[in-house]
Length: 380
Image (spheres, one colour):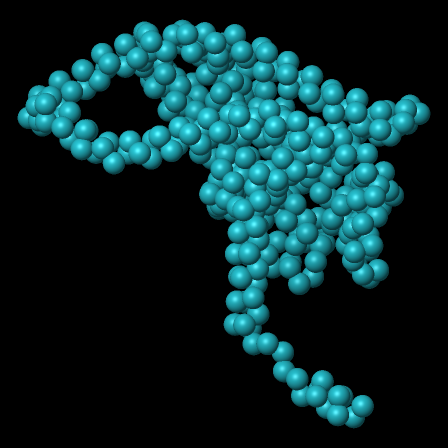
């Protein structure tokens, strides 16, 4: 017994460099798992976010003395009806845009010819030389283009399966939400019970406020952008306005991608250069109003993420799982911020994720508990 006490007393902890290496290897391992199992994880994570958004409706139906399974099923079907309605309303614009692709190609060829003539006059590079340069530059891209096309078709075929699995996961998460809550309380030590309460409450609060506010903001931006494009006289105003509203979800870069795409599509129609300039002016003004007035008041996330982490999270999410990772980045970082702020050893990381105007960690936890209450976790 004395020998074991001596060994325990003389045992030295791992040096900081070794502990840091283990943590970095753990992060790499998590990234590897996400990449390898993204087919399973993406619909599951989407279902978790959707389930939290549908949780108030499911609770309301249960309070009306409906069985839990029926309440969860009605909530999921309501979400399906909303998504289907939005797709149906946009389908006419999308079909019109696809039908006009030959005309768009014709206008694009005219602009391409104009650009070639300008380059020939400006830089003394003949049209034949330009075509040779373009041919050499795109020769190595043909094989990869076929691969990308195959991947795109394969992704389209997965949409139906993704939708079915997401709806099934959402129903099961809502139905077994009490079991999932009990699992979280059972898996952690009793001394962490308060932290588990805070994380569950904070996660639900952040996702509800952030995701709900984000949808409202997207609708407002899409409507305003559509009105602006209609006033300018741009063809496909509804389609392009809604597209820029959706792309606006991507932090900082989405609005500029939407503006460039809108300008390019408008340029291939009958739009003049004056209209293209008004597109940039109008959408930039709308972006300024959104950034300074709409987003701070409507989105109203309880956890503010600084711009560096928001962009970095979107880039990392896009690299790991593609477009879904870009949209999942901010809710994920916000949840991590809650976990970091409620865990003493991880609070420095919470400071790194927040901005200068972020509330101190203790006040943030108190605000979450005051808003939701510890009893609220039992309603999960």
